[in-house]
Each structure stands twice: as C-alpha cells, then as structure tokens.
Length: 149
Ligand SMILES: [Zn+2]
Image 1 (tube, protein in one colour):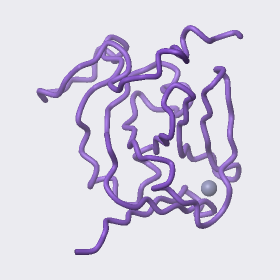
Image 2: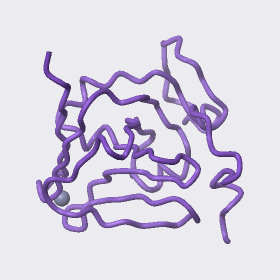
Image 3: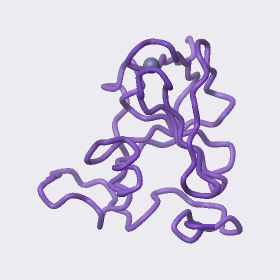
C-alpha cells in the first residue's frame, strides 16, 4: 500500500508543498485572530508533524503578531498557508484552502467555539472546545497571555 501524499498550493501556484502520511488532527477554528489573519469567518486547520511537510516550490513568507506564533503566506498572491506555535512543538498546521484536495480533510472538533459567529450553524456532534482543541505545552502558555510582549 502506498503512503498517502497530499499536495498543497497557493492561489498563484508559487508555493507548493507535499504532505506525507496522515495528519494527526483536523479542526474547525472560530478564533478571532485566525479570522483576521485569513479573512474568513472561520477556518479549518490540518495538523501535521513538521517532518511530514516539505515545501517543493517557493518559500512562504512569515508574519508574527503574537510572540511564539508564526503565520505563513504567499508573498505574491496572499494565500494563507500555515500556522506554527512554540506551544505546539513539532507541529505545522496547514490551512484547508491551501490543500489541493480539501474534501479529503474532515474536521474532528471545533476550537474556540464561544467565538463562533452567531449566524454560522452546525448540525454536527463534534466536540466543541472553549479554546484550543489540542494539548499545549504549559510552560509556553497560550498566545493570549503573550500578546504585547
Ligand atoms: Zn501565491
């Protein structure tokens, strides 16, 4: 059996990545930082370990507003690509819109449910977390506690 390999690319095609194997987690995110960063009412993040993701064309540009958090995007077309966080070691979270086959990534949970926009309705029975849906490194803390530092 061949190993799963998924491709991701930005809107203009400058940035291309391959993700090998299965993602360890997929979640909806209703957080307002991500809403601003992506320009979308919500997003779906696909969690891979860093060694699973290889950029085969182009180099994403990174931006950090919050200490310990890096967001990457294509400098040419603006597509959001990934989220990396010191509190989530060895993890790279790709945006579902970057993936060439987004239909293959079904979310497993909702993150930051209290920030969900009121007119977005879900009929699923997925877990609805108050904040992150994943365990974080407690020593690093949460980005909200690191703002303005
Ligand atoms: Zn691009």
